[in-house]
Amino acid sequence: MENYCKCDIIPAGKANVITIPDGSAKNYSYTIYNLPRACRDFEYGDKIRVKLFGNEVKEFVVLGFHRYQLQCKIWV
Image (cartoon, rainbow, N blue to C red):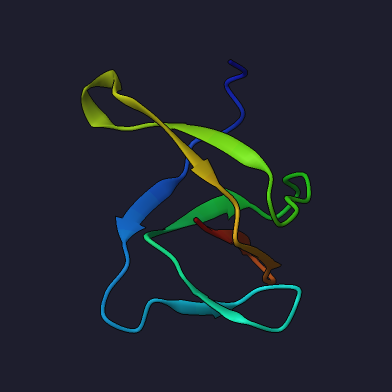
């Protein structure tokens, strides 16, 4: 497992729907944010691992990725 960067992860609220590349809607469970602006691009379907507090590691499938001016977000 590669240590890529520090980030924050929060559980999805009630508005937890994202449009995936085929145009359909899918529910997501978490939003990962505060990724550095210069991070690599993540594609729909990529598998990523996130180390949570207490060193628990969870694997997620990327449902969406967006690059903002100062940070990037991933929906899983």
